[in-house]
Length: 522
Image (tube, rainbow, N blue to C red):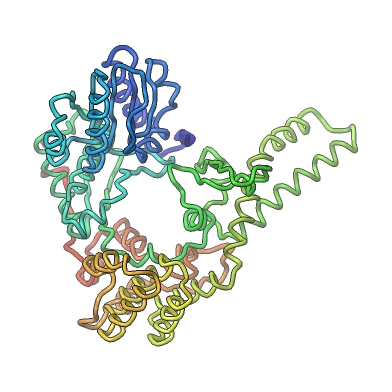
């Protein structure tokens, strides 16, 4: 299970927010008396491990199971399903209940939707004729603290739902999550939003305040001054680029889930090839907090220096008897950090084995050429080449999307050719994926000139990083590209949208700048 993040140094009292989520879950568990089996959907299991220890659930006679298509294996007379509001999970729940009935098992069934129940899910339960057998409730888990400066709604599929499926329910969840924050920290006086979904979320937030007002008189000065809402659609360029920081590469190559990465035990120095181990990554690890935003080559230097320093101190302690008590205490304290250092030495060396490959350097270089809109033919030929080499399809599609976004699409002849080559190289089963990328506007035929060079110059997105070890601009994380969304946030914080009003019109969706205190004062 993931390590519960240390939130002691958070700017807001996120511990209280987490404790409220703990209290609400335990209240559900305690309300169902006796021995029970708690069945959690797979993604939610990881999320809950960031909120409370499983031992807290077991104190109330609770067995834990992960929801799957298989029959439920438990002797408990009561079953509590805790699942996100996804249609496929309703089939799993229905099939498990039917399987129990076919065996003559009689149980008491409860279903709690996270964060709220939706009609479409309940309709499936009715069609499967199990709705009446369930006691249904909600567990309103909206924001999960991943670290002292990061809150997540854990809505993995919200972009796909909004752009491809036309399901905008996640926008309501965003507004509800912010409104819950306001009950803890006061009404947020300034809202700046950009994009269709973000402006809709801002409107919903205002509506929620009118329907279920947070009392401004009792809250005092709001702890949050401004909320900035940006659609992912406004900046699809950044997630297509390769990050070069330690944390960024960990996510690129190992994928960070619930504040940890899963790696082969042998990478961490254990003699257990094939066995997977979870390595926690959050600010509870002081060394990780120090190095996570540094470039990888700097991280390797830092962790090796720390390890060497402790080894030298150890040799000195062994060879002399003149150490004072305070010096010995300091050495012992540093010695305790050795496992932490060893962990990051192993991880950094593993990442370096990938990042040092010519293919990785070539990819980063071609990304910069695409971002700088330098040579169309060079970029086109590179993408054509990696398709023919059958490099991972994710690599191909990320570069293709980046190329399309910065060029305003591809000429029809090139678009059709690359699409055909991808299907021939990787299989026609990828046709729906290519269709969805086109539907979302991520890969498209060129219809007009691109605005990218204008946007890039106006927001200074391309920066010459002279000293990567001591950078003075956020662009260092992408080898000289400053994320568009970060530049927008910087402007929003400094002067609001007014100073870049005309530029915002070149980006997808409407924008909004609201002052809320006076208009919502009671």
